[in-house]
Length: 167
Image (cartoon, rainbow, N blue to C red; front, side):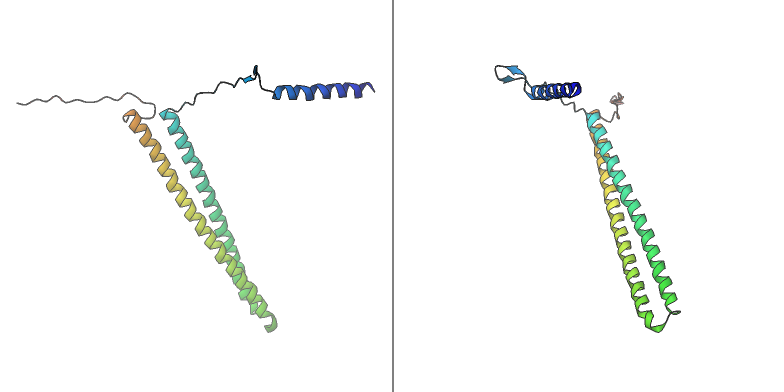
């Protein structure tokens, strides 16, 4: 009996505390908002984000490439099975040959479908790699423009000046 009372009191305290924490804090109805963090957006930070995005795009392209390879393997397996069925159809009764050839044709159609899916995946992977290259080039241009070609960490560059001499 004592544990039920303790549990009831603990539950009531937990529920009332959660409701109190949900209430806004403030004086006379003025709600205090937590201070907002300033958004730091330096050139190197933007370039890092662009390089990270390019890496994510490359990862997606690699995933599409793996999917294309798997589709190619499936297509090859299905085509081999269709070939085997066609070769074995000669050993079967004439009445059953039509159904075996129909199954082989179905397997060949699935193999063709799998190959076209692989081609689509490869095309998407190529497009994603082009996008990744574009994003990387944008990051490099951003760094070069804002740091006068000083590189990633804005190393000081030496500028050579020529003195005009006429003899």
